Length: 405
Image 1: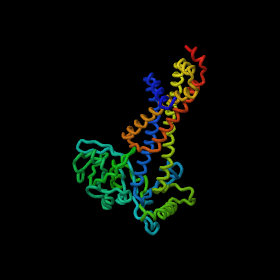
Image 2 (image 1 turned 135 degrees about the horizontal axis):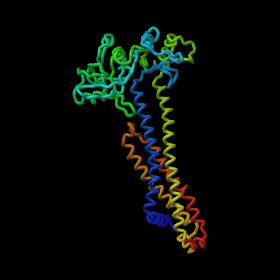
Image 3 (image 1 turned 90 degrees about the vertical axis):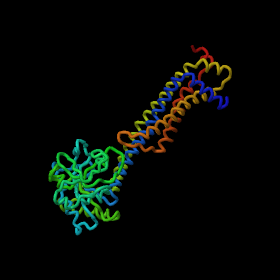
Image 4 (image 1 turned 180 degrees about the vertical axis):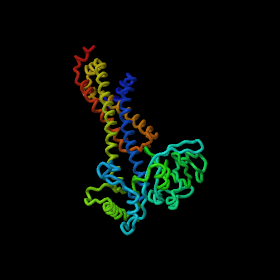
């Protein structure tokens, strides 16, 4: 029997049980689509975080309380000193930190904004200094930034993100209009350019106001959440990082460099941490998806065993008239491989189509290797899981097969 005849018999065998074959292929389809889609979601999440970090600005350094990621912010229980506005002022001293261009302490909260009956919950209300805009690479598209005078006078002015402007003011120009933020009236003086991006937090849903104004209205005059520092150049970030450490160690009375109560994060360290976290996340998603692909392979074994049992007499007749063992083996292997080939192909199509939709706020980014790998594994699974039923069929003795009822 030539390969063409083997394929023709295999198609005929699958067509004889259309529903059963379709359900088996559905298991493989779901497995392949899950691998492609979940890895794409993991990759898309990674890309969104990477874009957000890069949009902070090439020279930006972030100083936060705590000895590591997830560490204490207030530190009242373990003696950690919180960051203060005075810490930021010390970092802005050019004699102590010559590599630092500007410093912007930040407090962050979330509030509901109102404008002429329209309500919008702002994802991030930031209280800071004007230096924040340059350090965080936030550019104004309409109006202007607030000034140092606005900070000194604690004026109720704000620069809003493009999402906040669209949701709260619609098509109207927000500049010069008043909105009520958490019960306090603010005059909008500028609208930021859209940064875009995907993920759980919209970077354009933001209100930026003078630090003392936000502290007076919402957070109180205590510690600050973090300090955003801009180095004089990309090459100066390492020097600036060392100066930040020296200045804050002196202010916090820390002698041991291994016992810092703050952390300084540059873009490089943030990207390294993000890459490590994303790798774990993606491997986890891939493992979960691989289980569904394995279940699809077990389904192929189950269906092929049923097929061999149902066609035992047919196998006996073919062997009685001279069909060699290899022909019987090849026919059933061809059927199991066709199930995985067709199911895998449809799974690739479903995965690629599904990746065009936003999932839980994340735009999936397909990894080409995952498409090729998932399809190849599906084919291998068809061969592997079809091997036992095919070998069982090929090993049947003709006389026993013909006696089968």
